[in-house]
Length: 346
Ligand code: ASP
Image (tube, rainbow, N blue to C red; front, side):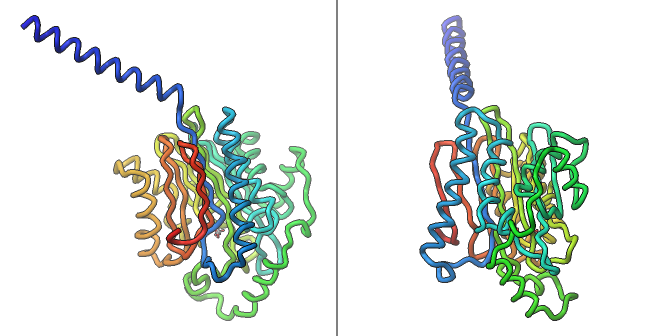
């Protein structure tokens, strides 16, 4: 009996020792990871020249490496998300910051949000017209005000009070987005048709919203999204991107997520918060929750060919899903592997 006890005790110590080692190893080398998107939509290789495709891929890579560099040097997930998104906001390729789509009246009205999964703090801005990096202003709303969302003139006055310059409207102009508006105006007949008829797939509204989700070495998740919204949207329309739980959500206990697509669906289905809830209350793994939201729930609700999601959990697992023909996307996973993709099936 004494021998048996001794054997059992030694076995327990071995197991406990192994456990401690694992914990030490994990804390010595905690996972860091980042995932980004540059919008979901009707994207196919035949609509793109090789040069344009290369430009998209290299800008996505640049956004990823900017965000990852922050994580690598011990920076926070909030800084990583902001760094990655600013690269895409500064590029005219994406529908965020410079290169944003136009409203019905020919304006650029941009929305953005950032969320800190460590404390559920969030900041957002909507309908800003002169802010070079709306994600940076969203971050200031989170950190320097007691509020979560500022809109239009008030948001811009706050930007000025924080020393942020206002850009002339011309800075955001791109011929491609202007032409998209002209085509949409020409096609426009009945404004009261169902959402899916007005925006049949995201090709009609000019995709290119950008988003990022990151996990830092302190175990904190952050998520952010920035967009010009939908081409030919009514002035004053706000989409899902600046709204926590709709286009943007982060919670260390579960995941961070950023959405892209026809915002009206994301707002009614609270898609990013739903991913978190499925994990928290049903115990689903990240990938199952993300796939369900995009390929089941959204489709059943009428949002076939209408959007996508990127997400990342507290272990550094990454998931992406879209029900369109493409989504600009990429990630650097916890092993440091860099992936950039555009089309379906890639
Ligand atoms: N979700 C954005 C919005 O509705 C647009 C997009 O992601 O393409 O404002």
